[in-house]
Image: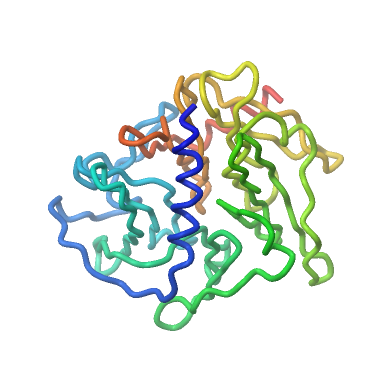
Length: 289
């Protein structure tokens, strides 16, 4: 377990998320013009493959990417191997091709495309970009959040990150238009160490996250829990050896069109990779719950 990487990842995200403004700066691309869906990449089947190999160059690695609901924007963090410096990047589909720019903020985009979340802050979409960051409010100020995602109903699911191997996932629903105090999930989800990076399906039918648990394949593995008929959450199902490795695997996220699962394989610099696989893979896990 690379504890320093775990802790430093949290610190890096906190620093990046504290930057204000949303200025964009074009990037001089040294790779071919990118056209077509998914930044011009050929989609995978049920066997995972690297997303956008060669983008960026070998000096960098991308991680933590999110598409906007219309699939015309892709926000991602880029890390330089030698310097360790991270930069926020956006790919935008305009005039029949993808254009890459540097931005100073990025995160999960709500299902209606109007809000972007990062840690315990959010921005609202404006006519020419995004607003200045705003606080989620006092209910969330005391949590060290690394990732927050939201369902179509407005339910927040986020991690509470510690520095000694502890971690917990919490949720907060909208009830009659009022935000409820965050609550921890049950032991089916909050078991093990480094429990983090949750993703809730837009229809709240499942939650994906990563954690170190007994019986895993190595460091952090990816897990999924499906909503049961009575509204409870089912037992955690390991994604299995096609997804999980002996290294640290996590950050699972399903594209807004519901077609592909993205995740980070062996998430320890400098060899981590963004992977993608047909989201039908999730159906194979549902039978194992």
